[in-house]
Image (cartoon, rainbow, N blue to C red; front, side, top):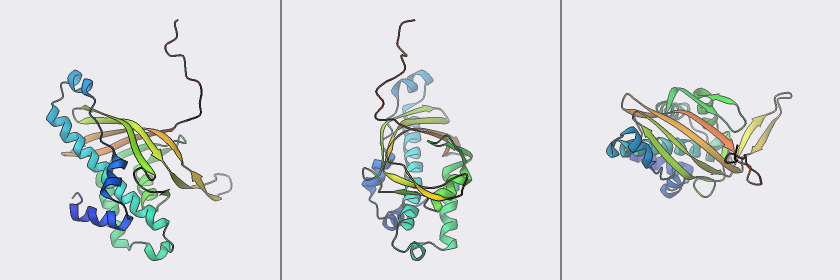
Length: 217
């Protein structure tokens, strides 16, 4: 079952975030009009997909923000949740992500649904805040292809990730403070939109060149 509005309010309170910050994290997801015309997708169907996908993103952001806040608490052990609450959060994540979900992260790693869930529930990504404070979605576009949808855009991140050196096993914090280009794919399964795949690319903001894609042959 999806979260109720009352449960969402409780998540926002636990993570100390506002609905405005959640909206900034999710973004508006403007619909790509040419795709609707080319694929003969009805406007009402596209709007329903848009609202459902925005809710998937919002609920995932709420859970991630909750555990990011716990990991950064003055006493993380005291702030930690019990096993029953943890299981509820894991069940919600199960509903948001398709079983075959994969993430190609900014380092080029292929990450499974289970690994993404564990990272979220352990607070391995620690945001400075949600929305403009640390996790904001911009420059987005939503393309709807019937029972499949693709979101492209940028994430402005101010965050740190918990990482491990392969050779030594040494743990360290990895700086995630950078804009990232993101592609998220969703599909409609049993009347429910779920995330199916994501790919992130860390942008080189100081790069002063580009491929000559429009050069004459």
